[in-house]
Length: 520
Image 1 (tube, rainbow, N blue to C red):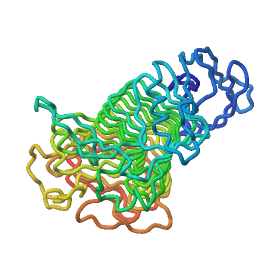
Image 2: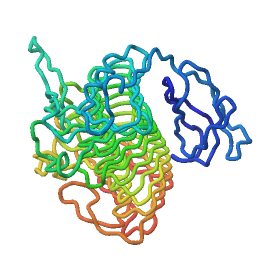
Image 3: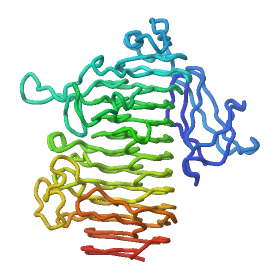
Image 4: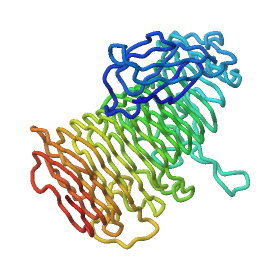
């Protein structure tokens, strides 16, 4: 077992245990810093705080008795020029005063390689805008609380035509389209080299009487996120807790070099569209050691609808989800459906999915376009429990105004054209799913553009004793089922090695229009 450094800031460091067999939570270990005992750890990803800037440390990982050395690593914290306390800038932290301007003034006054510190208190804000080359540290007992009053927020226009009328500048967005939206509680636009760290909480302060009321209706502009990152680079969020988001919780949009480490995201299970983390047309993303429990998808990977997808051709690429715990969401890790720019090189590993509707879910549809190429998607070393449908690939997802049209929903062959999406290589390996309900897997490719290659290897699925019939996928002419086996349709190459399904009803494998199937 080895220690890996995930992030180093001025006063905090985040680590990951690698090369161990446990998912998310290992056995207990003891940590020693410069040979002094610090604490026990129970998760594969953990942070150390209250360190000193510009100081060298040695971290030792020992067994549960603190006797046997398992691993050690040396690190040095970052240099800190100044540390600015927002209360010295007039912030009250009393939960009643509007602290937006005071916190924003501290951020704008912060020089390079310095820290904005938010101490204990409740800070009511509208929107806070980030700037380059700073660290923001949120105290363990600090809460940043969003507003319920939409008229108090600024609006980000969906797109603005450039002065020479040759291009467009994109800011606001809503479900994959460039549309006017309210500024988020934490908003980054064209910023670089920001670290937002600590153990405090960002409370979106949303409820059924305001942001969650009539949620699909635009009022002034579309609902804000808790965190928006628009065209940003080299951004880290580490240790932060987020709750009660007005809409998608964390939404990186056309950004790169992003890390979300050791976070907790919690939204009520009946809160509408409160996805956990939704990277859209982003590259080089790590989501590590994060616990997500929300009212929609825990992680949803996107690349816009057809307007931006066709114009910018920007896929979400090079993304790693590791050592995360996901529960209660509609899907644990979901790809689509706003995926017109494509997605590739996605690796999900060593995670636990608990009590989500779907496990790994891919959803696309005709009309996403020829640039919507989904490939090199790998889901390995996963434990699922009480997940209703562990694996769903749906090429007939009935979203959008035309979602239930014959063009989107027809199972008949429709000639391939510029509107036709595609799915390439998908891998499910070393996965254990207990107490499934609806189906072991429900895989449906397009008849005219079949899923190119699906590998299922070392997969165990068992069903719960008590189950209710439900729809395995959101598509036309889909019937309710329960304890269905492995349904596969329109896959060019299917390879199944060591698949076990217990307590299912009906056939284990249903093959329809599969040109090549290797099953053992």
